[in-house]
Length: 350
Image 1: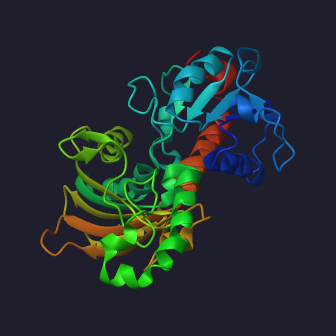
Image 2: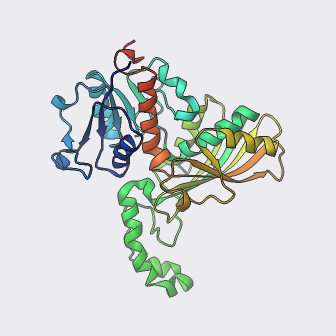
């Protein structure tokens, strides 16, 4: 019988890290010990679950079987290899390793077999928007053969972390007090409303830009959807057209997808494939608020395309902190454990 693993959670005081700790407890992860790590300024802090946060230092990172990271790409690049050297398999939620050819990019329900392939002790979690659409697109790909998709995302403020949600909440009272201006002179209403996280004031607004410039007018957030989808689905020629928009929702990303296939789409068969796929639920009217706090990815507005019988339109909703980040990370840690891929069984040392 496989021994219970010792687990590190790096970035434990952030929104995603805190959710990881909750999920490990809720799902009954069979750990011998769970140790939360964060920055030096958080070291010694006692969390609500009674755990004491440790700072990252060379003497503290050895002897773990698995380390789950949600501390940003800079921390991951510096510390993931140190945990690996100390014996752990790292499951990383940042962008640091996603497109590394030697690092599997895994969605638990979609391509878990990649965990057993040769790698260097690091497994990557996809971007939260990519994550949500991978489940329904994999189900439909298996049925009809995916060749292309157009995705327009409506991403929650929480996608920018706690700071993104705080900025939205802080703006709302100011703009609500300017309701008449919002109706008659929106530019005047927005004047002087501070924003540092989002590209423009987000309360009572939508902002058609998030991320950094990646060339040709696309953001890096949009290009993540392109490159990560191709890698996860093993479809290097997949044609992806992305647009990412920030919306005034606290938690929960929504994505309108027009997917195109090799074969003509049968609507009944498509619905059956989606309904049978693990982690997917069908809902005629899924909204991000309704699915905030839920593990499933919801799919609704499933419609045949008006012009192309090989295309299908669908609306996808998922909690960006759960399935979009923390849940998938914990699921991968669970799979690594149950499949005997930690410690001596890790493909990095096998």
